Image 1 (cartoon, rainbow, N blue to C red):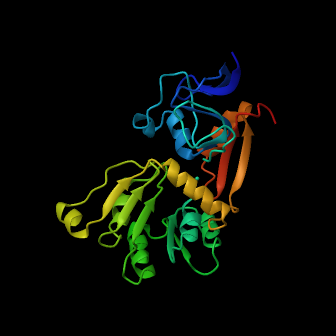
Image 2: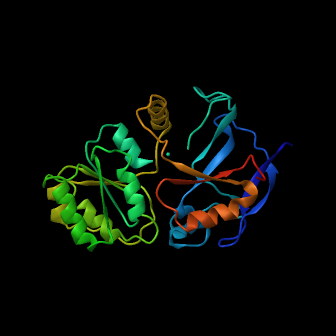
Image 3: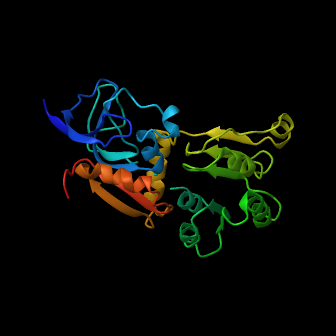
Length: 273
């Protein structure tokens, strides 16, 4: 039986073991993808090292092959799969660039790293992206700044990617800045704690707080089309590539939270440099 290269998580908190596995055969409803790149995020490191999120984002029975945001080429499809064929490419995602491309006139970025925040502002030189460091004055200063930047009208939406080490209290306060009838989307899963609203706040502000597990296939197709058309520009991203044998170095790097526009990518098809 044909083999594929894999990196297995054998035990939580231990290094991955690189080896081979039997190449799967797609069932009637399956798609077999040859993974060319697999992106890692800080939360990935937290899960496999036994951090707090491992209680929520459960892994399959160990040993297991672990990865996120895989991108590659379709090798085979099952007999009941339509509109996908061998040779098609798959894609594995950035928020400010998308918001700029979709026409948002004012984007407010909040974070801890001032250097990364400056990079965000430089994505558009027309003042559409404005940022503040959450370390300068705390959450009270941030919420006041949000009100000033929107001329007291408040933002229409909050897209929250609060990472490891963050607390849900901050998200609750920021959700409280969203305009009546707006929406708050939680996308990271790295924060600890509970989101709190009084009954009266939930009723009178009518702000929907939603979770997201990223995107549907149709949304990915739309995103690809917008990138191809030049509407969304991801050229600012910086990629750090690791062959499969250096997967543990990749996890170490992403665990150190390089932040900003860095993509930490493992390439399973490349065993060595």
